[in-house]
Amino acid sequence: MEGDGARSAITLGPVDVPKAPDVLARELRERILSGELKEGAALPAERELVKQTQMSRATVREALRILEVQNLVRVKAGRAGGAFVQRPTTASMAKSVSTLIRGRQIKLADLMETREALEPFCAELAAIKRTEADLATLDRANGAIAAPDADLSQFLQANVDWHVGVAIASHNELLIGFMTALSQAIYTGTENAAFVDDSVRAATARAHKSVTKAIRDKDAETAGRRMRTHVHTYAAAALKVDQRDSITVDN
Image (cartoon, rainbow, N blue to C red; front, top):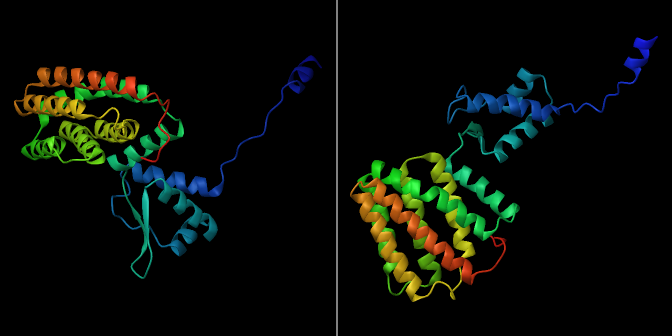
């Protein structure tokens, strides 16, 4: 009797049973991410998926829609259409990070702190791994930054291009994704003519050329040190002028 009473005191909550489209989407997602389904491979036609899985056409369509939203398949219409496998890219990663930044209304100060933590190491890696093509990208951005007739948006875009260029020169996909999102968000947060005056432009141009030289010389220690000084100085100046709490504008 005592044992029966102990058992009856145990209660269970509702069990969350996955919906059929989620089950199928998860199965296909694992095959894509594991490499079993190769980039560009065509998934079976909708009718064939229904036959193989014994799920309804509506379930199959919803599963494919889930994967399309997650950028794991692309769907083409027409006679030669269908669902085709695509692997995650640094662009899709940057988009996800950008969505997080905007959705969580991350403060500009936090964005700047994150850049200070990551970008000096990007510069160090860039000095070790950069190619001639990487250097050409940095040089083009430096030329655009120093252009005397560049308006605010042109200057800020050139600034983004340079910072992303340093990340690309690191040849580290995670850093490229993070820095692309961070740079775009900081662009939005510093789009302020009261801050980006002639002195800030000149200081930015000098700092970028200095870091670029260290990267070109394959001097990782100097590249990291110069980048650390640059992003810290830029952040301190920007946060004095721009007191907005978060990034809420479409970037």
